[in-house]
Length: 211
Image 1 (cartoon, rainbow, N blue to C red):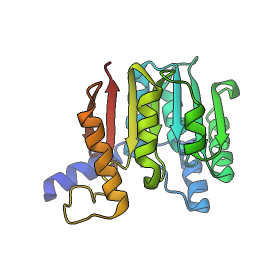
Image 2 (image 1 turned 90 degrees about the vertical axis):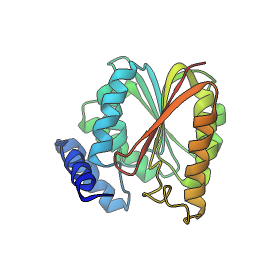
Image 3 (image 1 turned 45 degrees about the vertical axis):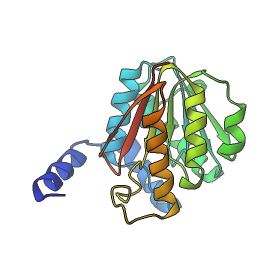
Image 4 (image 1 turned 135 degrees about the vertical axis):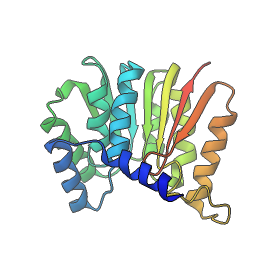
């Protein structure tokens, strides 16, 4: 990355000014050893959720609620948000963030369990937005389920799509990088989707179901 590009990236990442709700959520993340989405990605999630006009959304990997609060702030007041995580402490932290953000309890549903076990139980074509920020070992499976869950016109979002900037490096072939590359190819080649990757944070892969 050139010095000018690095400067532009750093500038845009620093633009969002977060409130106390997200600041406290990030502090809980530090205590739990969780790295939430960055401030640039969080702001982009809010914009994308608002533009999607989604009424049903599902998140795979709750983190500590930074992504959930960001998405909920963009979703309409009638939208229902489901978050799945295997770690009960992470879910509790996310619930605390939702509460502090003033999100009505009936708008959120948190499910503690392995995504591979939970996702098959969710209804086909029943969601307008799917956000994935989970372990790379299961990423391909999560994305395939995410596409299945989307209604026509629905949006799929994958965080860390560049695997901490390793994807563009051909010599890097570790499992997490290979999974990220496979997901990118799958979404680009899927006839029922249009997709793009933006370099916000460590990459946000976006796809919209067109058929």
